[in-house]
Length: 253
Ligand code: SF4
Image (cartoon, helix red, strand yellow):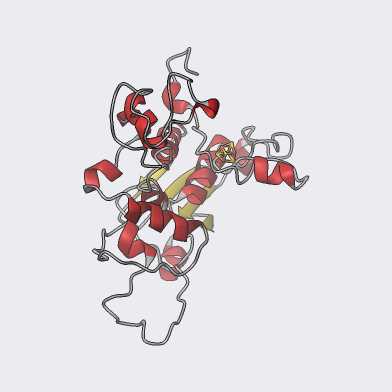
């Protein structure tokens, strides 16, 4: 694709390890979080269907699942309309891409945008679909609901309406001002993401950088990489000013 000038059609790895290495370590068939057909190519055919089997489909929710389904269905020849209440595709990936170290998530959205256009999926953004809407739309033969998840309410007594209690959406999407001391409840992936987000203060623009916006020198600094290979493992010591030649700041990772 790159050689043909179609680099924007490359689906970029987001370095999650969830469907490739994690599956392989458990002896399960590997796949890919951003390419669910990977390693299932013989089971999931994307060959175009005969005209008589093609349908008019409505997909509700333009997050990763809705986008992936819409693209695959359009490749098979279905007529697909993708609806979302927000102004752009991506769903909760718009929060994930803002977490420092997850800049690759921008590229997943770029890939989806390119593929949706390439395969002729109609986009209806800023559009909420109700059960009544579905019932009254005679032109859509099947509906696919891909509306994602709601944050779990921990139901901690006293938390409701408390101005000091925030959800991850308040922080990652709405830049809630949380103060200097923060307790995060829940040490799963989202808890870590929120911690990383809060530990790397900066203006909102810095948190919306794409991977290509960061120079190689900035990346070395951020991750503590010794580009001279003087230290075993290529990692710079915190107090080593000599190896880098581009900054005297400590690694931030
Ligand atoms: S599952 Fe896919 S996106 Fe995630 S690390 Fe593996 S190859 Fe990359």
